[in-house]
Image (cartoon, rainbow, N blue to C red; front, side):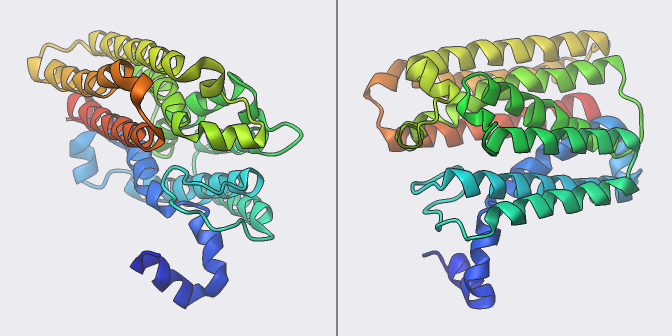
Length: 302
């Protein structure tokens, strides 16, 4: 048990299990992706001045802790994972009221969203509904190949940065819409990569996820195609924004190269890779995602 986990149990006892199942290690990733929308809305100069920062921070907390944390807790309550899951190694057994805790956390965030613009509230409510449909029987769309994919590419891919933008109350321009839309196929590329190393767990539960339906090689090919589509949309957004600065194109190109460095060796070696290697591949893909978020901010918000 890590020192951090030991400290958590000393402070909270077994109640710490509830917090662990919200996967706090993932919060910085979700927070960064949400803040991309805020930075695209106000620009780096506006962010430096603290423009519309208070509603953005409130929206960030509600989205990351209440919505994302509650969603993951709700999902864990029904998955009952025994092996590692993303951002939670050796998950403890789900406590008795974990599903109710997750729903309560998401509902508290929905109430908090009443303090923010209508567009943010609608995005939050839509994601809350998608979360329930994704995890909770009899719907449990995460076990329906393709439905699980669509929910995640919309919810995390596009609506998460949109929430950061919507929290400011500022309108989204044409280039911004294309950038936000580009995150949809980008997450479509990432999502099957997060499932490849979980084939055995998913098979044990009888969940026929998208990645299981496609197989390892098929998942990797779909990921490569979707990543290409995402960068095509980012390029269209750059044209719509009238870029004439090569450094912006360079930032976007470096992000595309980062995805290539993850996917091409993975496709080549997939037949001889074990579970741990596939898991490391997932974390490399998450790093490529973070590089893309940074590139988008540098290219559009600066």
